Amino acid sequence: MKPELENFGVVILAAGQGKRLGCVDLPKVLHEINEKPIISYILEELEKGGLAKSQICLVVGFKAESVKEKIGSGYIYALQAERLGTAHAALIGEEALPADFNNFLAINGDDSAFYKFNSLAELINMHLENNNDISILTCEPDDLSGLGRIVRWYNSEVFEIVEKENLMPEMEKIREINTNTFCFKREWFKNHYYNLRPIAGLEEYGLPSFVGEALASNSKFSAVKLKNANEWFGINTSEQLAEADKRKREQFYGA
Image: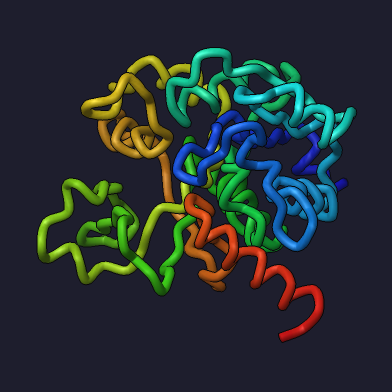
């Protein structure tokens, strides 16, 4: 294991049911692409990169025991009994990490199946080398429908996340989006979590709200853009699940 990763944790958000996908008895992250659970791919990639199972916390909720049984022992499991959004899930996971971990990666279990560890390592290394409070992974996907945007200011380093509901017409041409993959300095995360406001119309707290909090508190943050935008792929519908399955099979068997 690389020395810089020894006190580094990963929190994988895997508590959701997947209602848009029509999940009833099987948690979203256990649906299969190329005959393997969606979440298994990011777990394998993290371990290939040198992270131990004992550094990885899976935040579970819907059908939690099914996830534990399928994924197996060695990982940290944390239960999000009341699902109050992605930021809340990250808090549940952060609290379960070993006390001596100073930084952690928060990542979705349902849109990370195509990530390569080198891309995540670029984010992690930038975060640690710059001593950031918060770092974010962005990308420029081909399909921007239904997605918010990363709006960069005059110096390109300072930015904000504008959700799709709040996009101004001139922002539609922006191609950079938030992947909802973040690195946090743990102490900063804990100190600022309770400053977050719930998402409008929902009693939930979202990870993107931390960017606004970083701006308001003059905290240190920056972003890394995925070189290959195809590494980020959200799976929210049966059509997207089928497309993800097709892509994985093409990767495995060849186009």
